[in-house]
Image (cartoon, rainbow, N blue to C red; front, side, top):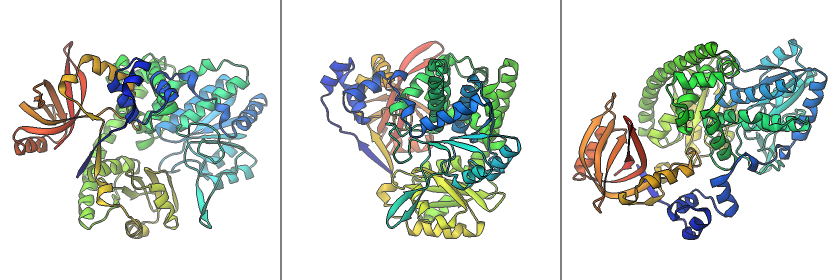
Length: 571
């Protein structure tokens, strides 16, 4: 079931258009993205790195910088502990690059997904202690590791946390009390009392802010670090952060840098995945490059991805890139099988009236649980947890819908878990296998989701006739890029669109190509990617006509450029 919603946000679009040299239509699309007021519109359209807030505004940043400068002067051994996903790997790379350039004695460690689990743990701390590490810096983790950090401190180590995840809390007397780790410095924009104006940074962005602050405090030119913005962009898109505010600037600038990157590993990865450097967009980071960088941490070790970013030899870079691509190809095949199993279970659970799907796939590789949960959520429109066997008990990942704050709901039954964490739309859990049924029963008994809240919401920017689809419009729409979470591609709608010359094409026979004509008689080529059988059946039922949502694009084929519309939804 889908719920189509057309946005009707008001403003003086003619005036906004005149002020910023854009069309009233584009001004309306910007307003639909909740960008309001001169400063924010200007930042949205023209924001650059110069508009980013000073990293020293982050709470404890001054303390972290002071500690690290002293450790560098004293040649103390520093260890960066990242995480096994795309954000953690890029954050670790950024810290290593920045600290090494300042002459620090620094190395890195990344947890193993199966042996160590997410984030900092006792094993990593003991390994660091045995190897003479004086100072640990976490990145993309650490905010929830109070016990582990206390242990590190008891061994005499200095610990600095850089993270972007929610601060854990406990309920007491109806109030939430944050639980901060006992680190020497905690740099996380989400912590209470942090004055940094933008709270949505990824872990790599926080790491970048730290090395930038270190450079400035050392009297070095922070512009020397600009090349690392491409890594912040990769992490921001790969970790599915909202592409608003500072994230939009990081990704916009970082994508331009990626097109001319001098990093041998990234160049090799772009080459072996068949991408054209000058055509790289956020989509390619999210669905081509990102999954390859994540594949190491999923199926083998994230050290492979970090090694790719750090490699200097081009021949070695090509080997490392090819290995990661092969791992990702293997991951894709495993994912398809796991999604089929999960969907079968989901059908059964939905039949029992369950609104929160807790699916147990014992043989699914635990690193794929989040991807599978996401795919099932898309198909069934409800929160999904996918659990799989781990070395101890079961582990799993959850993916949620807007109306279900997943981390909050887990906190209400935290006694069921040996470990849990996450945020509103995604979470991770570990528990004893015997508690799966109790977990399923508990979250469903407490679930208050209505059918309306579980319906997929198709948000439409505006109705628009095909006569408005021009090359100039498509070019102007590119000013709204990069597209992604929090800044979606504009969606237009057309009623009673007549389709003729309907053909199924593509290697997997999953693409429809046709001619589409609107009620005013304007005609354009159209394509649809998805369930072609359902599309054709709905078309027959509608007498050759459908109401559709679409976006316009330029199709390039054999050097020829032509306008077409891509159909996204229909009824």
